[in-house]
Length: 316
Image (cartoon, rainbow, N blue to C red; front, side, top):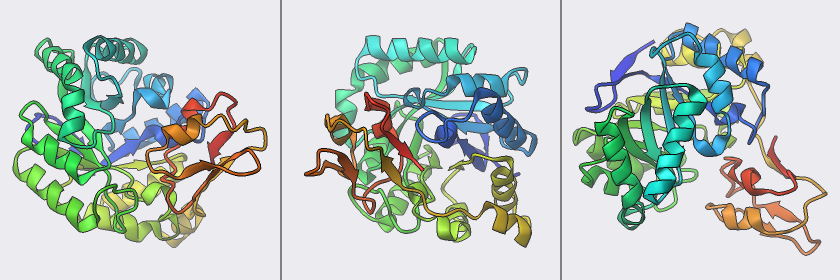
């Protein structure tokens, strides 16, 4: 496994980052023991970096996976908090839930532009103080916007940027793949640690996952690439690709998956909470009184499921 410096943070991360959303209650909802087993296999294969978020509700899965490993596994998490007191609660929750003395990377979740960053300035300033106290090692943002990368690049307090990037530009809100690649390059040149997300387009690129993954691996400005994995065989497949090893045809066939989709169950009450939560504009209320997704717009993030009062939404 190749390891790279995450910008100027002093953190050395594996080129393959374990994207834990797919294990979480928002997607596969694996039991804690099974989720931990998959993650531990990745750690045994050389992966030392895992990405999560407060929204994913899977700190228990990660705590179980990293138990007894000390600080050998780096954890990045995120919060939507925009006030100081909110961010303080988010950080305390992460520290206690993960049973850690510090969080390696703490990100402001889904920042859009310099205007969004201004609105979250109080939360960011709290993280700066937490970093000075040793409670956080590095701080940054995640973003689906080229403008978000540009804003973070210009902000001296931000060390890490976690942008969406894939070969077809799926999910990039304000530009295309080329524009995002240019923004990522400038960020890396300015010393920011950049690690990519949704390189499989939220599942839309699964039919040709190897091409999509090789595209991401080829982006030299990415210190790491977060990839969701749900089984040990998927771990084997991705580790081989990221390590430059040959992928046996048998393994390739086993892990080949059909594209996923968002399912809205028949008991949906059409309350509209999912529609308001969806930042991609993919969800709407049909005439028959049930929510539905425009699959071509859906990123399959599962974030809408976190606000559904009836648990009627899931990624399958």
